[in-house]
Amino acid sequence: MRKPDTLELYVDYLIAHQGLVSAKDLSDVLGNALSHDHITRAVAQPELHQKDFWKLVKPLVRQIERDDGCIVVDDFLVEKPHSTPNSIITVNWDHAKHQYSLSINVLNFLYTVASGDGTMQINVPLAFEVICKTEAYTDKKTGKGKMKSPKTKNELMRERLAVLCHHNQVRFRYVLWDTWFSAADNMKFVVQDLCKHFVGAIKDNRKVGLVDGNGKTGAYKPVSQQELQPGVVYKVRMESVPFDLFLVKKVYKNMDGSTGVVFLVTSDGGLDAEQIFQLYQKRWKVEESHKSVKQNVGIAQSPTKMERSQKNHLFASMWGLVQLEKLKIVHKKNHFALKHKIYLTALKAAWEEIRSLKCHTVNELAFQSF
Image (cartoon, rainbow, N blue to C red; front, top):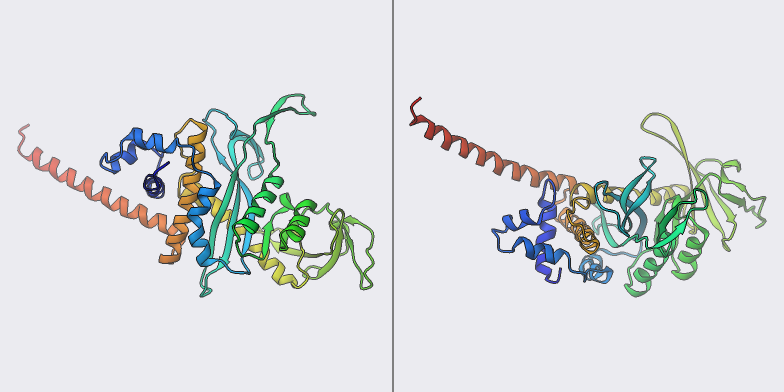
């Protein structure tokens, strides 16, 4: 998409649309001011990269950023069950559905910060990485040939965070993640390379050693086997992490009435248990972001077949998510309320058109003899 106006028109269409995305439909909406072929060629242009995305999102980030901001890192799947596989449309394990799916795996870096007046939480994707599997290998367990990315998601995460922190100079204090990203290398990177803090969950079999008042570390055992009181912050050491961590056990109730347990660790020793939990709760904003980009801007609805067109559609969808967040700030409505308002306006126009057509038909029939 060489022309910015074409990108903006396409993004507005993604926000307004209610069904399958179609270049022809957009052309018709524009009164054929842009042809179907022009729109198709624009989506196929290869110039859209993360530098382009940062240029678009930077002005908003500079308005909202604060020193206590958080970057939430998480990945999500864009299901493409009927598409032809390529380096980005691949077979991925869906943790939510506990099954494999043909999909695109996207790594999202969501910036979340309270508004200046404290009335809302603002959530803006700073960047995203599309996982491209271009290297062939043989699965040792099955002996079957598979494809993988040259870099792991953890490596991509560290590289992008370094750019956001050192090059883009984004103001933030914490990186938040779930158990998938709680690797020792990630912990060391955030604290030692970025000079920031992290809050993340760890699996119940992760081994930690409790540090007593004299600074002595006890036996390393799975965290689920340590004697921990809920709501108490414990100083611990973890294998391969060369600094103290702070651990809290949180017991909560699920919607079905069952009890759940999560173990949270942070590098910030100045937080109490409730502060640690409240920070981790902000991680849920990335899940809301993933739901919105799927349901409100049609990230999975691209009809394109070329890989670069599919990437550009992903780019446009993520930019559409930013546009919705801008509208949320101005109109004080969440993404789904905004989308519902757009839908009702479109439905009203369709209703009036149908009534007009029906009246015209009735008047014509009145003059016909049977």
